[in-house]
Length: 270
Length: 317
Ligand SMILES: Cc1cc2nc3c(=O)[nH]c(=O)nc-3n(C[C@H](O)[C@H](O)[C@H](O)COP(=O)(O)OP(=O)(O)OC[C@H]3O[C@@H](n4cnc5c(N)ncnc54)[C@H](O)[C@@H]3O)c2cc1C
Ligand SMILES: Cc1cc2nc3c(=O)[nH]c(=O)nc-3n(C[C@H](O)[C@H](O)[C@H](O)COP(=O)(O)O)c2cc1C
Ligand code: FES
Image 1 (spheres, chains in turn brown, green):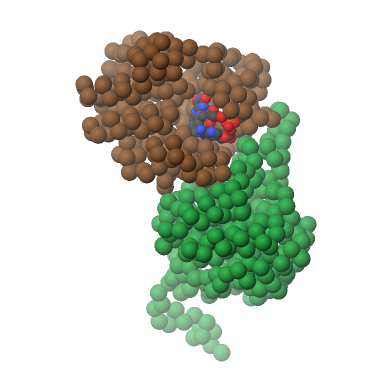
Image 2 (cartoon, each protein chain N blue to C red):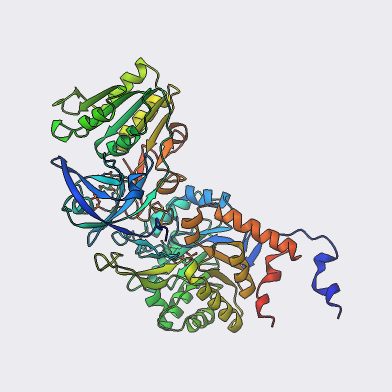
């Protein structure tokens, strides 16, 4: 019987990789998840704890996929603490994916927002000229820099890091770097995932210069399939209409970059 | 009497086929409504659903104060189709919600309310005084939250007091949403009618659960949830047929509608409108337009000019 993507499938964690003191990658075997499009996500069940939306991370091995999780509240800490050999449930993949452009590309990832960017990297063409920007709070929290470099070894490319405290790479917000780069040259495609304010600024920088830009949004998610309504941003449902939206569309959304909804659905300011 | 002459006026002269329907005092341009609890927390989304063909939208069931609901997993896709959910009535609370929908002029909004005592309903209805509300729907049937929903629906004395108090608090029509509890739902319907209710929505989700065989635990954080979607359609249809056979009250059919044929089945069983929720998860927002078109074509083929002509036809034998 074909797998029903809304039904929970149980997978066993085969490998746990510490990326930073607060970020881990959990690797498992699953053909469906190993082949998802960049930007798609899964609903991940941590038995006895909670269920969370997670972007699907790539691995270098066929048939394998991963999640890269930052420990935060109870749910993500539960996932962070899963050991090799333990089981989790997954459903999906859900959501749309990034539109791949060719030529000069700019990928901007903040924190675990790098996950969909890594999958996007596995789709770039050898002829693309790729710049990856990694934003982190401090040197301790930088991850995937080497991975990005090795993914792009056959491309003309740059991987740049900025840290808020200047302990590594450029000092400052990654959005300052974005502003500088889009001012200097034209990109055929700009892609961003990370904290919403960072996405908002990146979209503004690129869209105001008529560059094609897409962001992968994050909202409170319960169902992941467009039933519960908890993930709405204006008229859009992130789980079903997104998570990836065009800069053109986002610039007319009143809530993007300004408001989010809490667990009871009340609109709050960022 | 010549059947041909009298039973089908539309075959004698051209009558415009219309999807408009009335549920007692409630008038809708289209008979397919969004069920409570689905996509219901933003006015912008309501606008979008209305543009997509929903005849009205029912809000999430609102409580007097904001509720976060249960932790995830709150929803589970059943292998053969359908969903089990225990969202736990998460909602921003009636006062916040009323503020959000105050600007609304265009969308027919049915406000769904949940509470444990008559005063809860009185308080909540007051919040909507400055809003354009098409009707209130009293949720007497949520199967997975204690002290409200089914626990209220199962208590005839409480149903009587809540309906009476709500009726006394507003002139806007009031609907009672019933489901399968320990009290026979037909008795709950009877009590609600005696207390002055304007219409009935039948049914809510049916109490259910799912267990994962690998980890050997219930999947939903709340263990039990409500089953919705195509698996419950035959049950919901039976309930609508039973209510319309026993009582003379406008009915809204709800449970497992995903195609125009399902909707027409409910009309034939005695419903004047239908609500759907799970089908949005399966077929997304286009489902409203698709079902409207299907009903319209069926009506033209069968020479009906209004939904009303179809209501209850399956009982003619
Ligand atoms: C599409 C998508 C992809 C994501 N990908 C990743 C990823 O690859 N790595 C990663 O570390 N994190 C990712 N997240 C964020 C992650 O799902 C959690 O929200 C975040 O880890 C905070 O969890 P918590 O422990 O604080 O949640 P808790 O406060 O314990 O609450 C858990 C519950 O609240 C919901 N929730 C709380 N905050 C959010 C939020 N900001 N967004 C969505 N749901 C929320 C969850 O659905 C969950 O049921 C993603 C979120 C989305 C929407
Ligand atoms: C996720 C979800 C949340 C729901 N929340 C509510 C609610 O708040 N109030 C209510 O009266 N019914 C609620 N219901 C029940 C639906 O309104 C409807 O009665 C039921 O799902 C059957 O219709 P369907 O098969 O078309 O989904 C909910 C259903 C689902 C799936
Ligand atoms: S998460 Fe439920 S509608 Fe998007």
